[in-house]
Length: 250
Ligand code: PEP
Image (cartoon, rainbow, N blue to C red):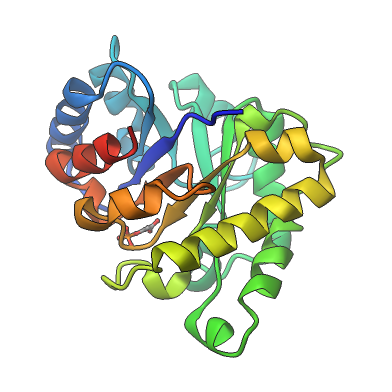
């Protein structure tokens, strides 16, 4: 079953409002007419404006994070319902900066992931090992534990589940996993999805690679069998480089 590649830009805590709108418009104008899904995750405060600016285009707009409770006394947090209310359609969970810089526990990451899915949004669940974990042969174990944050009895639509494999040592470092390293882990992830769900489900889930993906290395990564797109940080902040990656997915 062919999987439509999904290229998503994670803008992190970057851009002013004017820059966000410029970037979104530039990307929206350049999206190919088919064959690839394209999304951006701006900072929370600009999601609404970016949704308005990209109306009429195929650009999907999502969020980098959310909270798992529905509404209430959770100062500073943003609920899935609020994200949907302003037109966001996907949300990341478990990004390595949330896990390792903001110290989110596996339990918190899992609760957020289920809130996103149960709220009807597309979930991009990020997994990936740190350098010492790779060097000590624990990469697969770490990724397995992070995938176990997802409960198969609560997630049944593979079109709304995306796994982003992002080795922490490759994020923002300029050091990319080789095509073989990426393919090997993506296959491991798909095998695990098959064991925990079933073959059809596993074959339909998109698995993105993230970690210093750029126009120069995108084609090699994206042509591997189990690499179904990318989650892009640095190279997503310029329409030209982001669109070059989008086109490499065709
Ligand atoms: C990311 O943070 O999701 C990411 C992949 O960043 P970069 O592309 O800058 O490595």
